[in-house]
Image 1 (cartoon, one colour):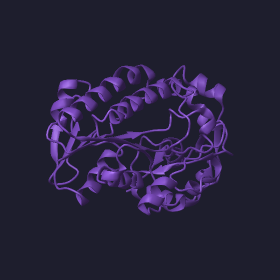
Image 2 (cartoon, one colour; image 1 turned 120 degrees about the vertical axis):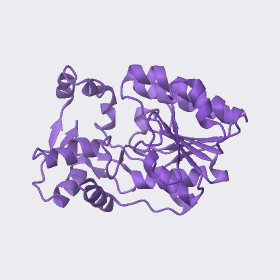
Image 3 (cartoon, helix red, strand yellow; image 1 turned 90 degrees about the vertical axis):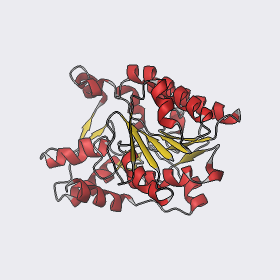
Length: 308
């Protein structure tokens, strides 16, 4: 049994398809899970309850932690440590391996122009401090010998039917509405994006590779990072519209935060847009001989499948 906590999320639903290459016993866990594959086992659960987390993990060989909580600091500080502790304890109790799908918020601000698995850990944001806390919890349990686990880390991601992607929300959807696509702070800085089908495929590979455990892995991402303007140009060209962009400065983000709750959460993360943000996944690519999808192909497929 391989279990996905957050089974119908952006990555979880694609991961469920990829896992059929390794097992026909897949359990999807969420408040209201829906089948991705015909043979999926559905396990409704409130993952903020440790007892329900323990029951969801019982009988699993591999557990994938892919939950996406509401994007607010208060929710993250309250729910993430509790869920990580419950997941670790349950995996130890039931002798399950744990694969945690992570982001880059915990890295030092100086590492953002070239992030590797060895980049210094020193989060410059409060959300990053939460990510450091839960990553430390997992790796401490691994180093103690009690848990078999790994961290699969992704850059910002994009892909088909992915409404949580920055590129879909403020680039693709704006174009569809006849508006200018948006970008944050500076559009002339490079910004890596991980393609969700690549991320899901790589996460499945890691979860089913014994030698991968005990490590942090950057998920495969096109090394030819583009600037915000260049990425937007791929969308405008493919969608046959004028190649224009509206850059949101910090003062406007703060102003919007007075009226839009999500925007209130954004200013502390803008260090990721005022400089190059390059995500190096060469470790994974070389070890598994994996070639990431190019941005050109990824944007083409994202638009084609999102418009369906």
